[in-house]
Amino acid sequence: MMGSPSYTISVEPLSAAAFAPFGDVASRPTGERRRYLPTMLNRADEAQSFSFWISSAAALRRLPLRATTLERHPYSAQTFVPLGSARYLAVVCGADPGGEPDLTTLRGFVAGPEHIVTYARNVWHHPMTVLDAPMEFAVAMGVTGRQDDDVFFDLDAEVIVVMPAAAF
Image 1 (cartoon, one colour):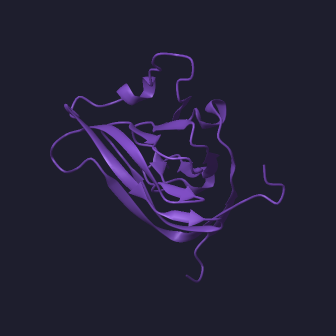
Image 2 (cartoon, rainbow, N blue to C red):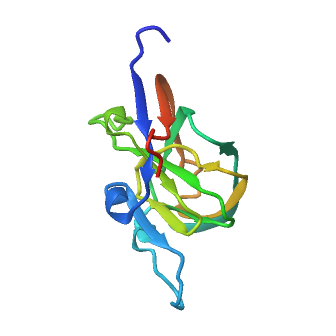
Image 3 (tube, rainbow, N blue to C red):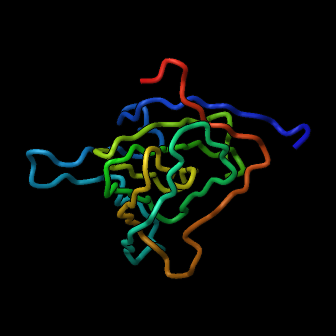
């Protein structure tokens, strides 16, 4: 689109510290009986029910990715547990004062199959996208039962997610 802003973001390795403004990252428990995911409990009173499902994510194979849509979940955090061995993307941004995505805060992370990602409530994120090969995720979040748990935003701006020249 002529005159629309353009954003190019280079992905970085996922770490708990870098992802903290957007939610939690946990590794699969190795040598532990269980690992708790604290942000997963971040929900509004309206999200009285718990939903758990398996979601299939398309495989991109390699970057660049042209992002066209972001989503958020106003009543609950959303947790993704990978059920395979592929890498995947976690593309996120904050909200502007009106609640729409603030594209100046866009960040992109490459997660490994050992990473469990929880998007905090109301965090804008790109739909799950897998690198390498198709993969499924176990997904959990609180729901209201009113069919208003997902908010989608079509991007007018051009948003391109790329791998940095000095890939990790």
